[in-house]
Image: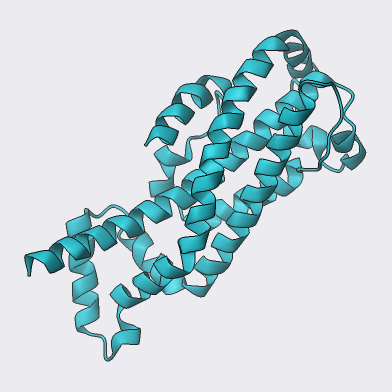
Length: 234
């Protein structure tokens, strides 16, 4: 909750215009969103080390490394969901259900199962266990993202003229398009404003991916907590 509040306060004005995953993912197929995010990350790039100006090099490299780490965690998440498509399909089918309605659907589904391995409740538990390491890595990245987003807000304010110039130069074209296929420039960017805007976009994409996985974890956690509550009631 602390991370979510901090990100909202810092991130909203800094990345105005970006779609908030937390607001829209309930209406989207998360697998499709994650695949699209992977493509955007590859297009933007996360080459490092970067050496531009002492004082901001550390931030630029940290932003690239955070995106690279988030990309790898997202890849693990995609592999896990590919291996548990039945669980993903079930959860997506009941994405708008209350926890109680979801538990009822699980109970009804499992009533027709012939054995434990066919029960969706058991499959959800296995899926949760398989994703535990992914979730832990995602939580650690959420902390790092909060720190880097705060740094970004400060650094961009210190270089607002350079950033404004870069925005003017990039008018009519996306930042990702500016960097696509320009590995040499990504490794040795000459323009401070462009480099800072790229770092901002790197953090933006990393946060989108982080929130997708966070929502998945929240869904599974709510199911587990409800099951424990029902067991306690007997």
